[in-house]
Amino acid sequence: MSMLSCLTALSHMLDKHVGLPVRIGRPDETRCLHIWPWRLEEDARFAAIPSATPRLGETGPAVTPMPRLHLLILASSSLEAENLDALESARQVLLGTPLINAGQQRISIVPAALGSEELANLFLAAALPLRLCLAYTLHSAD
Image: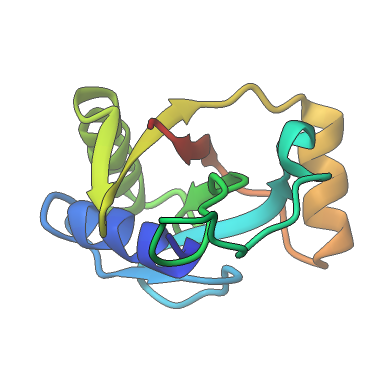
């Protein structure tokens, strides 16, 4: 399961329900809804396991779960009705669809708590103006 296929599945789902185009990547002033992955969190239980070595009688490589993927969903920095409506639509869709299928894996979409200091530091490090956003974590539901 690649992170790109997970983000693409999320993007396609949102694209069907929000009034703006959806892009994956660092936000800018483009008129769209941005999915901004900003942190990967590896599950420490799998860090010491040798990967990709099939066991006797198995076909294909061993599969380790996808790391937790922290992301923000945001529109341009202006608080225009179109941007607020797109964020609200995304919020409603994600609350109503806590699981998505990405390839052969089910992915859980969980609202994340992000403190104002951590959020401000993230935007400062990226040299972006602070803007209204939604925080979520994606992880394997299997």
